Length: 450
Image (cartoon, rainbow, N blue to C red; front, side):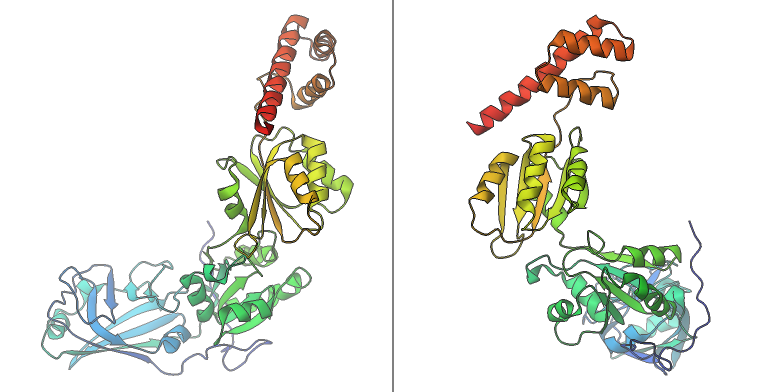
């Protein structure tokens, strides 16, 4: 495991913006959180302390030191790196050093943790102490009637690479209501959104969207340096594609690979994607599958890609455009036979549809349509289990082809015996097993059509 990345010395990004502006200027002074005490405050948690907007606290809330908290979320989001936390109630004051959590976003609780690594739902990490180690006179003062609490956070230096984070965020594949609250909060907490289509993303986020930078198939390599420079200044960067999870047949791989190589913090915000959505409703096995993206556009390359599925022991998922779907399914039928498939169209959009059946049946349904619309996600059933022949893949495929062609059993077994050095009797038994498996599959197909 690579050590945590150390930030390089950089200029203050608020004073020297790059091609894309900083969404939140680095604060020049401390950020203050106002709160009140409560009779149930115990402050006995060893690893955390917390401020809550709630107006009460139970005796089990051992980490809470203040209630009815009030703060500026924008000001907290602008903090980066090491901070000095000053806790003050009346004349009693306590100071704790900590680090702003790089993954802190809007709506997260104000939890300060001793844990050194970035944690979800936390304001600070790497704190010197939890509430149990705070001055006991401070805890006593906070239990008094009308006790007030003031907590200030002051940055200790210029943020660096270890203070930034790259969020890889899933966006809806059709229905805008599928954008999760966490995804929306993360997008609104970012300093920069890197988007495949900035117009789509702005419409999705609504008012108050942060700065955006386009990143698509044609410019991704040229954008990497700029995004890494922003991460180097401690920025929170959100990566989104036009729909679904970035990198899944969408841009983003070059950027994520570069960020991972430099050991920047990368955090996923999962959500909608066509791949697992199609699998979940296909009615085909989901315990073992492979995703192959879009099929090649050229007919020969497409056939070669589909031919590899003849003996696949797993379900296969691929994407296809509406104007190529019939060509793709006809090539699939030709290369691997009349396999069960599920063609999922316009998932979560108006006109959502799943066409299940043998490849020939799905083709017949689509041929009857004057116009085929919508993006397709196709799930293909795995190959029927072949008998354990002990033959290599090449010989097994040859034997299966000869069986399908109706070549006599003796002829096939003699050829296999010569190729392997095994006895004709053993090869004869293997060929009979292959013919039996082929007959079972044909029977199953006939029953399904009936």
